Length: 400
Image (cartoon, rainbow, N blue to C red; front, side, top):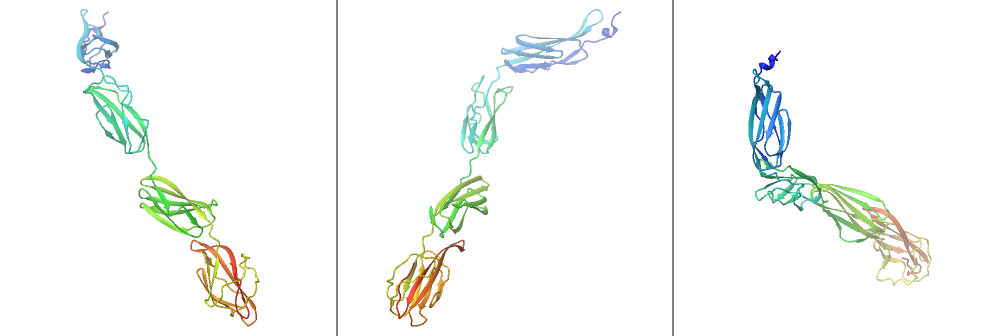
C-alpha cells in the first residue's frame, strides 16, 4: 500500500543558504540553510573547495583560491505522486577575497617603567600590505605612532598592563586579536633627609630637614648607637619640614630613617651621623685683679673628696671669684669650710670665698657638672672642686 503521507507532501522551500557574501582566501566559513517545510535529505555542492563538511542544513568549507564560487543546496522530502521527487534547489555566490592578515604577538617587552617609553614591534605578521590598518590598544599608556606597524608606549599606570593588536586589510578581512601583558614598575618616590653636619657632639643641637614629592604622612625613626630606637611621627606633610633636638649619648653612629607614604607612593631614606662624646669639662677660676695668680699644684679630679695642699699667705680670701665650666652646665652646688657665697647662672659661678676668722683655714669649693638633653638634666657625668686656702691672707692651689 502506498505511503499516503508522503504522497500528500509538497516540496520544501529553501529561503536562504545563510552563507557570507565575501570570505577571505583560506578562511573556514559555514552556511546554515533556512527552509520552509520538512526535508529528508540534503545535498550540498561547491566548486574549488579545499575541504567540505556537511550536516543536514549546515555546510562548512575552506576555499583556497580568490574569485567567485557558487554553493548549491538540494533539499528533498521523498517522492510525489507519479514517482517524481519532492525537492528544492538553490544556489548562492560567495566572493573569495585576499587572505586574512595574521599576527602572533604585539612584540612588546615583558616589563617597563612608569613614564618611560618602550617600543612594540609585532611578530609573526603575514598577509599585510601598504593599505593594511594596524589597530593598537593600551588603556594604561600613551601610544606614539598609533595606526603604524611599530609604536611606542609610555605607561601612565603601574602594575600589569595589557596591550592588544588587530590588523585589517578591509572591513571583512581582519586578523584575530592578539594581546600581551606588560609588568610596569612604579618607582619609589624620591625622598631626602639632611643635616647640617655629619659629626656632632653629645649635648649639641641638631636639626633634620626633609623633602618629599607630595602630600603624605612622614615619620622619623631614630636609632641610637646602642640600638635603642625611637619613633617621631610628623603627621601629614605638604612636601617639606624640619625637626630639631639635642644629640644624646652614647657616642657612635646614630641613624635617622625617613618614612613617607602619600599621593606619590611610598618611600624611605636613611641618614647617619657620628656622635662624639662631650669634651671633659674644665673649671677656669677668674680671681679679682688684685689677687695673685694661683701657684699651687693642679691635681686631677678626685670625685669631690677633700684635698689639702700647700699654704700660701697673702690677702685674706677671694672677695671676687668667678668660675666657668666650659661646654657644660653647673649643677648649682657649692660650699665648704669657711664661707663661700654666690650664685650659679648657666655654667658660671659668681661669688666670694673668705675665711671666717684670722686663722689659717681651708676653703673647699665643690662644683658639679652635667650634660643636658631634650631641655632637661639628662646625665650626671662628674664632679670637681676648687680648694682655696685662706689664712693670714692669700690663696693657692686650685683643682680642675
